[in-house]
Image 1 (tube, rainbow, N blue to C red):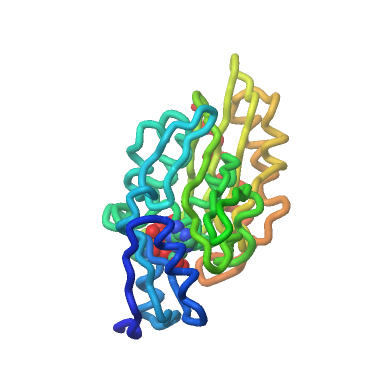
Image 2: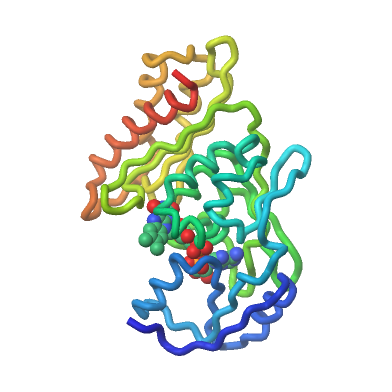
Length: 285
Ligand SMILES: Cc1cc2nc3c(=O)[nH]c(=O)nc-3n(C[C@H](O)[C@H](O)[C@H](O)COP(=O)(O)OP(=O)(O)OC[C@H]3O[C@@H](n4cnc5c(N)ncnc54)[C@H](O)[C@@H]3O)c2cc1C
């Protein structure tokens, strides 16, 4: 279908974009990033905004920079750039590996890191890695910028802490230099959307797991930290037996949906199996 008619603006800066959002009054506005989720929604007429504010010309929203103990990723950085960017590969390998599993090359070249997080699809592959790594989300609005922890950013199904008139501008990720990482997901052959996904990052020393960060995709309305698994891993030898025993905690505290792809019990089973695989790969076992 063809989307309903809308006005279109393509600002050149964050400031200009915020002014357009603030000036919209009662008109419904949608921000356009890579369009890989928004355009299908418009074409299906599930949304019919009066105004589209396209962030494609806002150069300050693209790219990655080193900020001491963290790296900062611009919201308009594409999935493809996330897979290749050396700073991300060195300090937040989990994000790079997860982005490699998103859709196909065409979608990865258009779709953005920030768009994926702002869209907050429970089956989206980037929210759980961002949660596992304790990312912080920088949101700009009419009264300045504020920072929201990943644990507070995803609030419900397709809902985040971004409010009307605000933009996600960048994501700050603490450095996990030297950590092993892996993103394991289960999907159908025809589509790369995760039925369940597991983001794991671990640090080992002398054959013992000293730190672990694990989060789950599509095991609830929002991404979920597998804190039971993390607690069970720390201090254990990096062996297949110990890792599989810890993975048995994966479904604790989850609230997976049942849908045409899988019912809740099957998703719980998948979470356990995939967590074992993800942590084994992250630990290099
Ligand atoms: C065929 C296909 C297969 C896909 N498969 C997968 C997959 O396997 N795994 C996966 O994770 N994803 C998948 N996707 C989705 C893809 O990752 C999208 O790129 C992502 O969901 C949205 O990013 P975008 O930049 O395209 O955002 P858009 O579609 O432009 O925007 C999405 C939403 O976020 C809002 N938004 C965007 N940027 C901002 C911002 N900076 N501030 C505030 N709000 C903002 C928009 O207003 C909109 O509501 C797939 C998409 C397609 C078309």
